[in-house]
Image 1 (tube, rainbow, N blue to C red):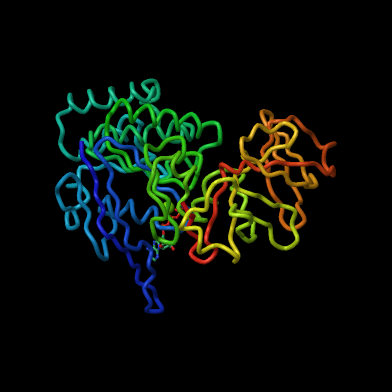
Image 2 (image 1 turned 30 degrees about the vertical axis):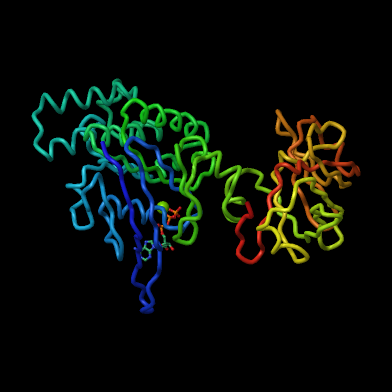
Length: 374
Ligand SMILES: Nc1ncnc2c1ncn2[C@@H]1O[C@H](COP(=O)(O)OP(=O)(O)OP(=O)(O)O)[C@@H](O)[C@H]1O
Ligand SMILES: [Mg+2]
């Protein structure tokens, strides 16, 4: 098995108008041996391009890629010891599941017995022994996906690359396959790089997540670190559903304490007991963005926050989710989403109530750089 290193990798696609399209810009990252790394970001951010450069299916415009300690920039895909699973499976329709899985090994002239052993082992791991005689058209989407994964497993590659392998499956099947791939990772002890635009998939599967936007790495961290300490507004908004509330306002010093006041005539005011961080000095007396996650807002009467700021708001929309309730609040200036532990329903809409912000979970962002202040 092996680690994968990208060092200042760029990809420019030539365009017809003569100006290159920068698809990937200065991406550097290191995937440790046996790590499960997820690349996540919105459509068009350069995830597939990055993966395809690692696979050798796309030329690198600038930079270096290493697998193990070998620089692979000029190495043919078949010599890189990787296997890739694509979104559209790309199974051969006229071949049985068995032959689809065995195909790559046959091409490489593996002995028949060895092929059989590997295919049966993979089928066992994936629970598809009974399906090996069937052709793809007689398989469900999830079963086809397993065959495609089987084809990667039998190669026993150093590195597995997955490009949105679950996006053609229905929601329930996706959740099931998600856990199966996670289990597979534990069983095979292989290095895996997994591309998705689904933040839930990223959060639940990755040892580490790389968030990309516009071809650039926004943050590279563990799932919880990304969620709790997003580097910038983009990451804060991308992970979490409903996303983090962002409230415009100003920060002032009032009797040595930091105070936030919502702009545009809103009702949110918060006084912080903690001391002003030296970095925050630059934010005083000018527009600032205050970030708070929906679960860090609660009805004042039931909240248990140790440091809270109360504000009145009208409950616009009530969304009962079962375990909790999403409330869309009007504060006068902004709509704010609260994820309440209280069970409420549509009859509670339209009421004016007191809400509390958990100030120990508050974030501040510089509106110009969009970076979060530690
Ligand atoms: N062959 C190509 N020629 C020109 N531009 C391309 C080519 N392939 C991709 N691009 C552009 O490069 C950018 C990154 O594309 P890429 O396929 O890597 O995105 P992605 O993050 O995988 O998106 P998605 O989630 O939609 O699959 C996009 O702006 C895309 O239009
Ligand atoms: Mg893609």
